[in-house]
Image (cartoon, rainbow, N blue to C red; front, side, top):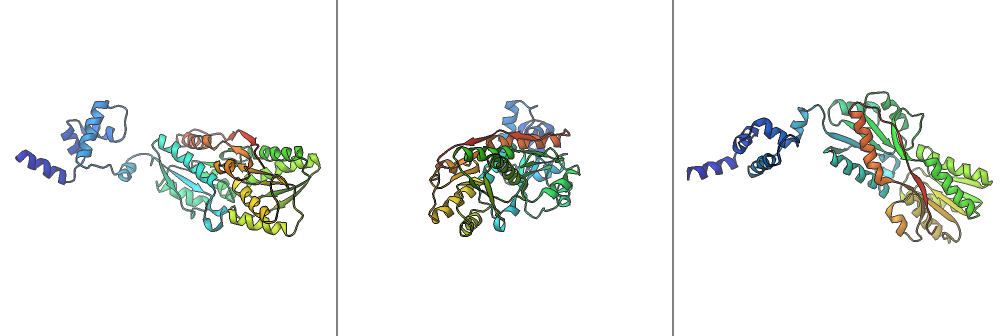
Length: 341
């Protein structure tokens, strides 16, 4: 009877690692190894300790645990809020990247801190690392942050960027060959006999500038005319409004290269409302090869970025830096996916 009362009383009270060690009949360092996932503990011992911990409602205080460790085991991921209207991101491509990064971090038992858009300068990022909120940064998109990224590269802050790979940049980047993507789109327009091309995108962003540059290289070789529709925001609604307004002031193009598949969908809708359809009236190429592009009507011809590889590579490059090594930029395979448009 006394034993049962003691057990009940023990379960109702807060237990600590000393209690878990005594109940599991192991040392306190062994309990610590088990709770930290150390491989230096046998499976039988691990299971016994975990069973005791669960039975007594013991939970690891991860924040306190991190304070005792040299690293926080947390990675801050920065989305490019500034490139989207009112900071609202709706492009599936961004969330595909984020999902890949999240999966790669979970494999390494790293926490993901989705950082707020307020970290707008290099010093704020440096302060976040110094305050032990994270061990490093993954930036998903350069957008208009290029000056800040260059400033941050002059510090010892570990970070990696999804975006344009430029040999002149001093930081590590992972991305597709944007200039090649533009040339592939232009070469397709040439084979289809198109002569009046329209590029849709904000060329102040490095990735998009390189796509426009590649398109122009193909256009110059074929003596094609290329107009530019500059859209300030990447949102579907902004592209739709821009494309609809552009058509009221210019002759319709016979080929359109959009900076993303989401933008391509907006162009198709705006042109359809103006009585134009792809591919009958114009050829169209998007970028990213997001899953909806294949199921859209018409199915969108696009430039593929291998995002299924991107998350793992971004995390690997960042961990190399955190562990004291130098990480080199990586260019992913870039290819044209031909569909209905």
